[in-house]
Image (cartoon, rainbow, N blue to C red; front, side, top):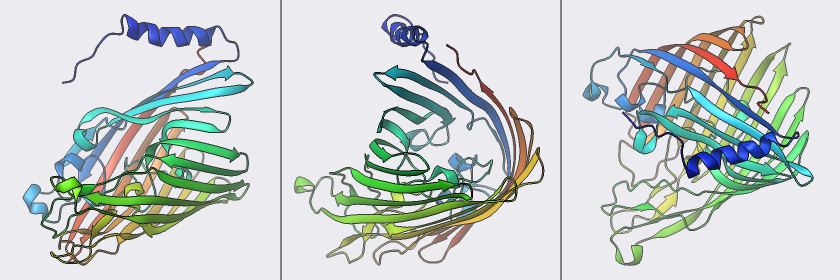
Length: 389
């Protein structure tokens, strides 16, 4: 188990001093919010143990017998979340900040219940700096699923960035430089390669909101590169231009329903997808691997329906598909599919209970498939302090 450390000395002063300043300012606010949540997952197929708590097609094993027998049960609190919002006047304009984390470990903490940073940023006038949703992403098209990871075929990345939003309101425009990250597949190349990120990614979007819903078009330009650790000056190495266009929108229907639609296409943009694929892979042969950016297409189509004030459902399908390069291996990811349907009960604004059926499929370069079929039952209790000042 991890250790906890009490706040004392300089650490306590660094926390208390800003709060004292906020308290002295009548134009300031400070809110603590979050929720405790437990998920009970009953799986019908065997998946990678580190990814039993959520359905992620890109992590479904092709040889499922190799990871154990089917029919696993998992209870998890990893979706639980804690965050703070603060606002204070800075000159003639408000300065807002957000810090938020959940307990769903990934990367080096894959499969662990540990702190995972979601948001850490400040915004003043038209400038935002810190980690939050990518400008290439549209968070409004995430459907009302209780599964943590969600649809595979949508752009979804919370990324460190510096963002400028010169146009705000019902019509908005934003542009940003964002942290790069090239995912490189060495394929059948005998040399071990790794990503090479010399420049930040450039992202932009235009968004229009109205009574009928919203529409957003986003674009990205990025340098996707690789080098060879251990080689002379990192050679062989190369880079190519990655690009993408993300079209998303929602259409309001009846009193509260909404239709969610999205399509994204580009080359070398897998790093920004919710799941699946690589940015660059070899397309030649052993003598000349000839690395190229990998084409990708993502789709999402969902419908959120409200039966009444307390019951709702979400149903839909999503996919990520890449055009594999000739020198990739037979088991390289080619397509991930995700579908779900649920029934949610919200007796009040602090309590949610729901049951959801999920279906996932992963297809390899050679046509081999793996499946993840499961039922999830979740209970969530939310809280908010309101303005503490």
